[in-house]
Image 1 (tube, rainbow over the protein chains, first blue to last red):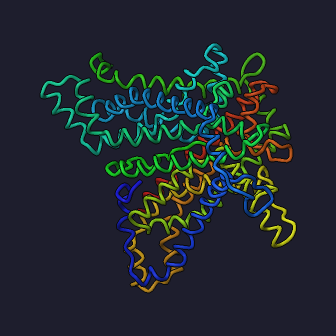
Image 2 (cartoon, chains in turn orange, green):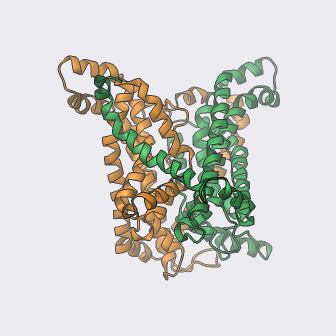
Image 3 (tube, rainbow over the protein chains, first blue to last red):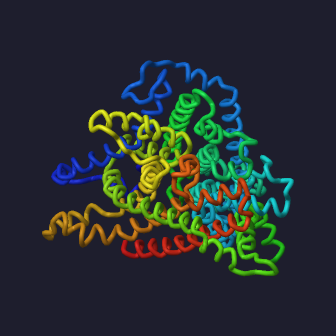
Length: 295
Length: 278
């Protein structure tokens, strides 16, 4: 999010110098506490990932890069990253195909369908994902046991629970870019519906598509409860790898876990900064637009 | 519905089907399983759950944990959100990105980070015991430990939810209040708190809801028998082992679902009230 996204913030930022001085301590105090609380655990991960040994002492006894090299060249880590990336890309592709036309229809063609999508998009936002995972597992076991434990089922379920990220972003973009007029103009000049969508609408809303997709990808990449419940250790994604490392029984796992966790945070931070850059045009239209959610 | 309109809405139908099949239908199945008794429908499964001391404890722990998280977020998050609202430009977008990532960083890696800090051989535990003698920090799987770790995820979430509404507290109002002689406390008592309260409560409720369903972190830190039991984890363990049969998992899931629906309803009400004030 940027200053422009939350435009009321910009005007709220101006204060008289007197008042600013009054609240200077409180303001920076609060922010420093926040950054400290969020930063110290990351620092611990970073230090541990470079430590030869660190247990029961204030500082590690020595430093080494071998855990990083070990983690980044481990075939387990690489294939877990591969699986998580595959899930993220597959879910994004499915959601592009399903969500963009649906959002287009509900904004431009038939607004009466909009409440349906708004109601549907509240479900994965309000309900714990473990509840959805439970429902899906029991449903599949009852109706189509052969599907249980398949990657296809996982991809479909993840597409369903993450569709609101893309839907909200695309809907916002369609509204702010006057998609209705755009598409009327395109249709008047004789463009077919697929052509209108691909050549006029999608280019106009690409920032919304990008920011929605990045949110989707980030939350699929770190998804735990649904993956654990629907497929488990049979398909070790990165979060499931971190679980195996955490549960121990693998000697020296902690330092690799620390390295990978820190790297994941850094990567997501970079992606998030990227979203900030991209997401300067769309404004949140719905007050219940959720942030990416994993746990 | 005529054919032409059906044709025009057709591109929206696949998503509708996905939503109905993967989001709505499974919930109906859960409801169906939870209400099933021998030879028909009944509330027996719910009676079983509420009369079992293990399940009652899990439900109680979840409610208590969620209440703590919501309370901590409102109390700690409100001053931080007010400070963040005034941050500008580059610093703001960096802090926001940081918060954004932290809010989705809940997994075994985060649990491990806290173990490095406040675990039995953690660095803060070590520093504390060197300064003050024996350190007796709560374990990560205890109510306090879990609250500390989960705050890492929920405090940033709360901030992201609150910022848009907190920004609505206009600075001109503060000016106007000062012009008419109201001091700091008077302004907050009569303008600030009444304006922000519906939003703060609504966002607190949101955190409450998400805490009830928190999964990844509790899953990894509550494995020891001394740890607390949460309802979300009970559901997950049932699904993995099915020692208790699917009815218990489905019933617990329906209880979480009903709670979430109730919370959502209150949330919407609070939000409407908040918007009316503005």
